[in-house]
Length: 114
Image 1 (tube, rainbow, N blue to C red):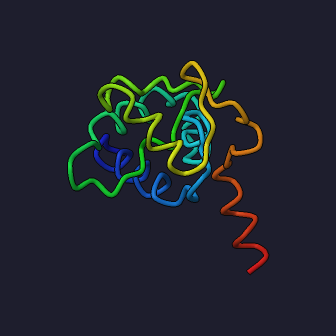
Image 2: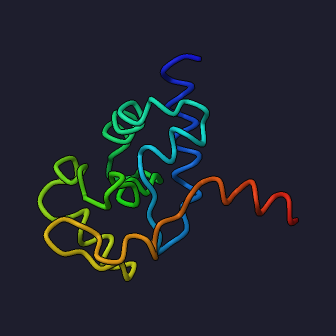
């Protein structure tokens, strides 16, 4: 698997994160079958930003709910975007992380139901 292909798969998963929910770099990596590649997920998201990006990278945080990618958004933009979706953030950490966490594995469960 090439880096470009992996990045593309990351973007496809991130596009599926529901509004008002977040996931982690590790959950995306595990879903893609590359459990030890959470850092590469972060790299993919770091280069996904742009004025016309359709990638909601602000919805991806670290495993503890910390806005670890916030530096790549500039200022408090990541927090602002999350708060616009109703996600509570305090000191760069999602307050109700367990309640708003979305696991990409839920996609598989939905497919089995449907």
